[in-house]
Image (tube, rainbow, N blue to C red; front, top):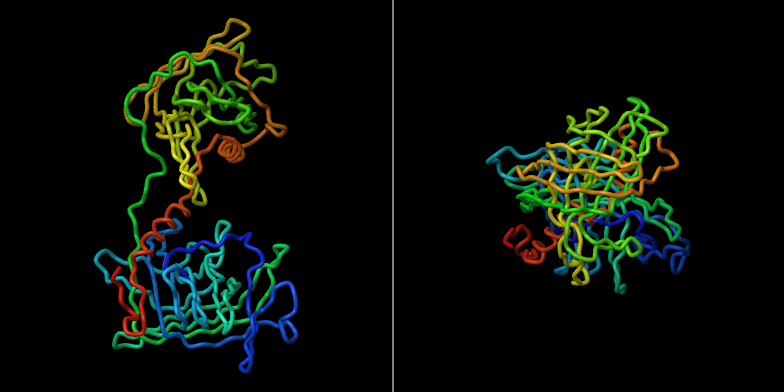
Length: 433
């Protein structure tokens, strides 16, 4: 298969598979009977003559090394697909991280599917909504290849000496039918004996966001919306507000020109009758995750399942962006600055509230500005929450920019794959790219 961290989404349906016998291998027809006979599970054994392995470092953030391993006995095209009859097993596995200066190789041992994601010697068959390990098959007379996923099994790596290794796979498989159901689909055993090498695909870790430096003057703002939460454990009222220093079309949910968006995470004493438009108070910054009345939380960006989530108090720059798929330009989220200090002063005339911001960013810049108006505060149906519930709700309710660590790194690996030499029978272990 593809010589990079190839992600197959769980919702893939209608993937073909094959059933075969020693005498007359025929492609399996998912959703119906096998052509020429009764539909039956696959049971295959094959000897591979090609090996490939790529190392991606601590790719899934578990403290272990991520290796992609493939053994196959067919011809692979530049995109990484089988173009001749044969079988290809591709497995994502966790292995020991190499020490500094240590020669990069595939760790010897038995890799299994029934381990925790953080364990060494784990076959990662599924994680965060993706199937990461799979089998591709192509049969004589068929234009397309067929794919199944890994349900369980092992991959045993043995050092035979003299620079040769044995890679032995014994895997139970399944496919996904048209209704999204997982259907057991037999067993495949593949063995490779020979020399191995490992391509190093580690990249410098990209930051989750680009830091907005310098001072920011938000001016006089008039658009504010947010949500209210009742923190039951500490009996606090929490207002999570977005204040716009940029024109925003609420109907189309898009920015109309450059500017800024200010997120504020305020905590007040708990009161069922507290009206934000009658608020008079001075707010100071709190310690991260320490919740007290008349404070606001500092900004933070965390990563969960490959996606960053902005929470707390921070400022976003709204700037011209380019859609990576269509090439179209639009105004969207650019750089961000987490708020690490300063004050917020709230005063009311009885009908509207005014927020005066005098804040400090992580980069040492100042953020100043004033909002006056009636914030549109949504009270969720279930607003009595604990800390974890509230964080999740806030992260999912933000106007989030699309940002997937998995997709980002996969694109990088894909670009590298395009320049990698395809090994042939005379250069099975050529690592030049």
